[in-house]
Each structure stands twice: as structure tokens, then as C-alpha cells.
Length: 331
Image: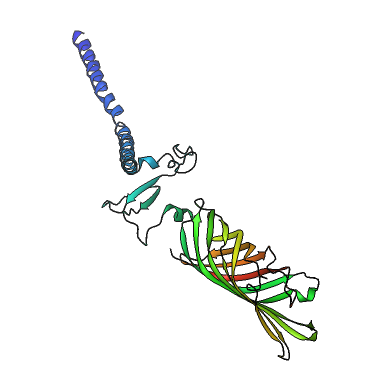
């Protein structure tokens, strides 16, 4: 009996030992599956870390090259806020690349702005006014000439006798003095003016009836005093002012159609001509380029230029003129 029980107990012990060794083997079989899942999860941080290093590289380059341009606009340089920074913020990012830099900067995002630096002004450089499209007023001088039509007219009781017209021209020098940076300037100069006006009438002169031709040939020295106005972004201007003119010569001619009467009188020697004429001047023009401009002017005479004349009624006459011309600037 003892041997029988002993054999049974031994068989149970061997079976228990074999069951313990078999169970771990069965549960360990699916263990490799989690290992295959862990490997790709560990690869993602490596890619993200490399991308972050690349972005940090470009960000650092932007900060080193243009830290003042990443967050705000430049400070104001004109007006009441000249010393104050502009409050407006911007989200644009620029990398400024000087032309003398050997390194090429190619950021992954944003714009690249190239700045050209010149120590000496040349034909290829521009100033801030040109960059903004503004045209400043600067002191200059030059020569100019005009040509047009002159009218001598008035009212001495016989309306048909009061109209004379003809050619006028003038030439001289001028100077422009700016009163502010862009809009106003004082323009003055000296002009030599000549006009020759005439007309024909049928009537009685010195108890003789016939057709008569009357003409005035006149020379003056004029001093225009003008205020010139324009906008900051335009070369087109307007002129307004007064013009005193000093008579140099004035010859009156009266001739009959049959040539039997041909009279020529110096109106200044006869004390019939006023010494100074006053006129209002209106004009406009454009400065086409640095050296050439074009103008038009209208002159309205204010005073009577003649007193009584014993041969022909010439009192109460004043001058009007319309002319166009060209201006040549020294610089």
C-alpha cells in the first residue's frame, strides 16, 4: 500500500511540474506583437524634432538680420510725431539681405527684401521724395519766352474806334524762390515785351473822309511778381500776381488808304503815354522735365495808358494779352 500511494503521489507531482512549465510557454507566444507596435511610435518624435530644428534655424536667421522689422513699422520721420514710434503693428516678416553679404538666405516662408546701399549719389540712386512720388520745390532760375495776341481797347465814345489787336512777344529771365517744401513759391523776373496792334476805320480825320489805318508799335520792360502754386505730387502749377510794366517806346502811325496822309508820332515825346502800366497776371504751366517747361499767361491791364491826343481819340485805352511760351531751367 505504501508503495502504491507513493507512486500515485509521484505521478501527481510530475504532472503539476509539467503543467507549470507549459503555461508560460502558451502565454508568452503573443508577446512579440506589442514590440512591433512600439517601434513606429518612437520614430515620430525624431521627425518632429528635426523639423523644429529647421524652423528654429530660419527663425534665428530672421532675428539676427532684421530684428527691428519683425514686429512694428519704422518710426515717423516727419510732422508732429517725428520722435514717436508708429503704433501700427504688422504681421509681415521680411529678411533684409544686404548686397555685400556673401551668404544666401532662403527662408522657408516669408518674403526676401533686398536693400541696396549707396554712399555716393549717382544717376541710379533715388531719394525719399522720388520714392514717395513727391516733387519738391527748389530754387532755380532760367530764361523764358512767350508769343501770343495783344488787344488794346477802351471806350472813348466811339466804340468802333476802340479796338486794336495784333501780335505780341516777350523774352527774358526769371527766378523761382520756394516758400515751402512742395506747394508754394515766389516767381519773379524781367521781360522785354513788344506788341504791334492796329486796325482800319472809315471816317473823317482833319476834315478828310476816307479809310484810315491806325497802329501802335510799343516796347516795355515788365517785372512779373507771381505766386506759384502746385500740389506735392504734380509738376502742374498755377501762377497769379501783378505785373508793373515800364514803357520804353511807343510809336503811333496814322495812314490814309490813298497814301496822301502818313503821320508818325512818338506818344512818349508827346506826353500822351503813361510811364508805368499795371496788370493782373493769371497763368498755368507744367515742368515737363528737369530743364524744360511750358506756360500760358493772360494779362489784364488795369490803368488807362493814354491821355488826350489831338489827332485821334486814344484816351481810355488799356491792354489785354494772351500768350503761350517755353521755359528753360538752369537746374
